[in-house]
Image (cartoon, rainbow, N blue to C red; front, side, top):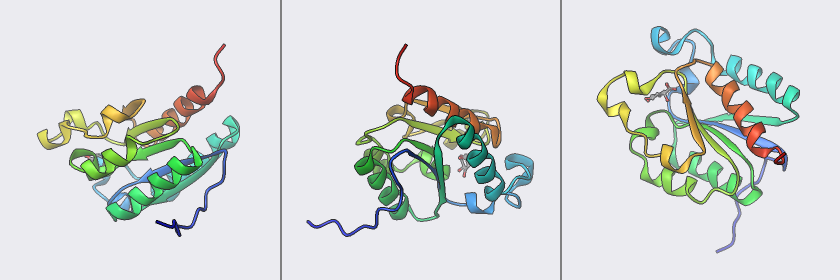
Length: 157
Ligand code: DQA
C-alpha cells in the first residue's frame, strides 16, 4: 500500500508526544498537574534539547489514530520518542503494539505519579515496550526523559 503520510520530522529529532487532555495543562486539575502549560513544557524541552544537541519536536493530540501515526513516522525515520500517553497509557493496546515496532529509544513520562493515584492508573500497557518510565516530577519528568534519551543515543564508552 502506498504511504502518503507527510513526514515532517527530520533525522536527529526527538519526538515528544503527548496524548489526550495534555493540551489543557495549566488549567487542567492544577493541584495534580501543576500550573505549567504544554507550551511551557515545550519551551523547557527545546532549551534542554539545544544544550544536549537534540532537536525537539513537541506534539499533542486527543486522537489515538493521530498519535499512532506519529509513532509510525518515528519508526520509519528511526527517531527517539519521549511519550506521555496520558490516559492511553492504561488501556491502548493499539498504541502499545505500534510502540513495540520502535526503531529507536522510547521513554514513557508522566507528570503525576500514576502509582500513587487511582488503581486504574497503576497499569501501563506501554511500560513493557519502553526503555524506561519517569513519573511524578511534573515538567521535570520530560527533562529527565530527554537526558535519558541523550544517554541512550550516546555511543558506548
Ligand atoms: C498522566 C497520568 C495519566 O494517568 C492521566 O490519564 C493523564 C496524565 C500524567 O502525566 O501524569 O492524562 O499521563
